[in-house]
Image (tube, rainbow, N blue to C red):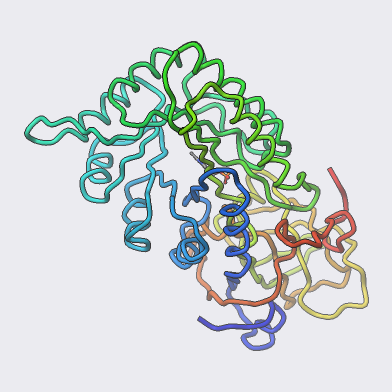
Length: 401
Ligand SMILES: *Cc1c(COP(=O)(O)O)cnc(C)c1O
């Protein structure tokens, strides 16, 4: 892998016609150390946010020992990349063959579920041919909680309703070595209150079921910084979660877990794109909705941008982007703030694409090629630097929503 100081140095050296992914391992390592040192429990990295094996190695080297995987392909990939890691299969709906392979071939003991059917499936798939039932299962019941404080809901699809939770918790307690309760408040949760509210629901479920609980897993949802979205410091989230955990009716030896995806990897990647054409305030670039800008296209997510050449103009004009495919849907509304003299042939760096960005690239329509390089400069925003930059005064941002 080639190393450069920053994106401008990459453009000077390569004049890249294809998009270039930039890795910043120092930024991911800093995020990992922050969680390892400051979260008052165990931090599992949610692999789906960015499954790059290089990133997994950085996180492992920085002290992240547990990984949340959601498919058998993720189990195999994470096991190959990190032979000694603890893998937790936290998708509440799995196939029997995936459970069996994960348990018997890859040493996975931790599974999540949200129904009696899934419990039966897990028990059957982990029973040996001679009829011996698994005695070492750690089973986490996924509770449905509100997504109202998150930018991206995860409330509709998974999670047992509170009214049905007691009977499921009791049934799981019968077969599990460790019983856990998990939830997900939705991605990019903008206030610690989201977790406090969810923990209240956990309390009710535990009291109703009258069971001993060994793991409380508060899931992902920890935010990162984007234009127009500056969350409170992560320390506030950790403090609120810790207080709520301490007041739950769980045993002294019970463990607190979290499953950050976005917060661990958002700062890891940015992307260099080339402007192929300009039409008014629309720029045709070489990456889009079927690539790393999936969220920009489909849910209007705004990412910070920077023109990679000197310009006399301030980055104060609003632009929208078209991606490279032949599809009208390949459109990112933004607004993305750039100098008014941006033109075809320019390169732009798009920041904060480590989470659900680099991972979303497809080969649709023949695009999705391009090089990967490493740079040593800082990401456009960071929530792990002491002198945390305020996006409201940043030149990348025009408006606060
Ligand atoms: C996606 C996901 C995560 C990570 O969520 P972030 O919002 O990226 O932190 C964690 N746990 C589960 C079960 C998930 O599906």
